[in-house]
Length: 143
Image 1 (cartoon, rainbow, N blue to C red):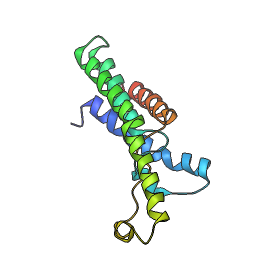
Image 2: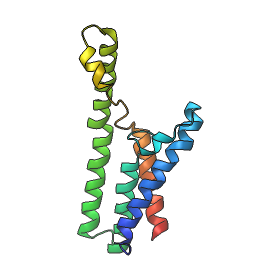
Image 3: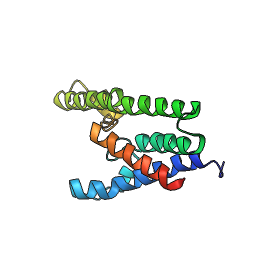
C-alpha cells in the first residue's frame, strides 16, 4: 500500500485540502477554526482534490488512454457533481430546517434536544474547482 503511488497521492491530497481550509477560513472569515480541518464542505473540496489527484496519478502511471484512467475520470466527475449537487442541496435543506426549529421553539422541543442539523455539507462550484486544481497539481508533483 505504501508503494501504491496513486493511492498515496490521493491521501496526501485529502490531507492537503483539509489542512488548507484552516488558513483560507482565517483569511475569509477572520476566525481561527481548527475543527474545519475535519469537517465537510468548505474551500477547497478535499473530495475533488482526492479524486483528481488519483486520476492524474493513474493517467501518468498507466497512460491517459488506459481503462483505469477512464474509470478514474468518470469517478471524479461523479464525485464532484455530487458534491455540488445533492450534498450542497442537503446543506441548504438543513439551514432551512434549523431556521424553522428556531422559529417555533414550543413545537420543536424534541427536535431542539437532538441538536441542529449540520449545514455545511456540500460545495460551491469554485470550491470544487479549487480542489480539482489542487488535486491535479499534487498528482503531477507526486509522479
